Length: 112
Image 1 (cartoon, rainbow, N blue to C red):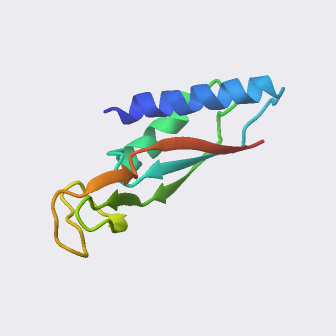
Image 2: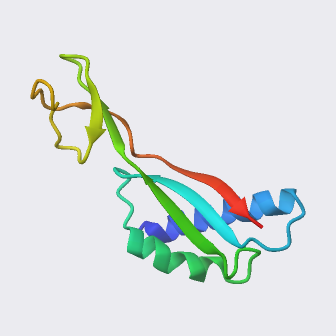
């Protein structure tokens, strides 16, 4: 379950940022997660409170926005939303389409 290590990384980044700004308590952790990142949302939401326990993030909510996958066709040049790694170009049918986004995860904001 790599969601546990992801939750650890999120809490670590949030604690470091809170410490840097002298914040005693984080109320909400706001994350953007790519639709193609392979993260199981239920597992991440399950792990986060356990990892946050004993830190300034204890009791904080985890808010996750899913960012769609993005692709670019090398044949016709179109750009489109990609639902999975097996997607073909919706314009010309070329497969595979180049994945250009949707695999990332970033800590967007902390509510303190």
